[in-house]
Image: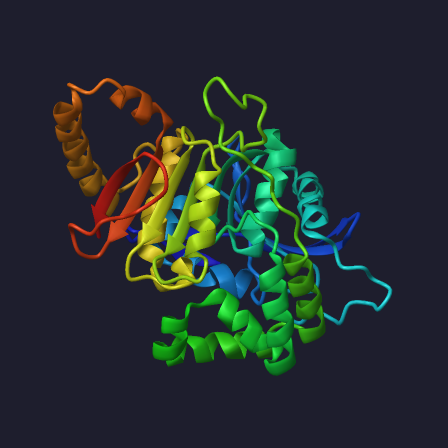
Length: 366
């Protein structure tokens, strides 16, 4: 595969597809590029109703992503039976739980000789990669989690889902999971495209099993650490970037997940004028945030930055003004030390971003 980077130079990208044998069945993987020295590989995992192509192809084909792909190899992972052209899974096959799916990933890393990864995942995939990072922190350097839900499905949700399953076809159930009501009502072309992909590109029997596995997930049981109290809480050891579109059906779940994360290593990004799949709806903004995240981890120091670089300068000025206003306060530093970095990528300046708990709200005009 030949790609053109942002400066119009051309580079070749080796692509290999393999079915990796794991303790929980074959996992289809697509490796793009060659792992580079001690650098982590970007590893992706898709949501229900999608596979790596329908979930991430538009993002990784975006011209702004090519600069990143010159520095990192990419490993796309498809859940068992979700890749294009997959045969119907055997009736004797028990579909893996979310925990078991996370346990396929060490075997994927071993197969390709990868030491560590930067994870990028959506929905069910975000839940799986979080479980992987919690159990194998030495293998994960960072996580970009889109539409993460840290909770098990509640009783009311299960009851509503059961009623919905009686009256709606599987593709409709998946569509309502991926997209908000406003998007479904107004963006007919997008919804039609994804309905076609869900119906025609994924084996429906296999999809039903993956959906059932996600709906049966356990709580992640992560908890925000509080200084001097719950020191031994279960939490991610790596930096995390939580992302959600402002009209996504996952907004409440992501806000709740954010409230449970370690505030010193977590960034929450709510993208304005954005639907259920930010990587499809606004890939350029997501890539800019991803570059910034990678730079924060110490990689790509000379990456070309546009929106975030300009906004960061403005945000630093705002924070300095805030510090000047609060110098007379007694607990400002304590609050600042406990805060998340909350980022709202707004299309129009001046919009407010609300979140629970004390935060630094860094608003970016993009």
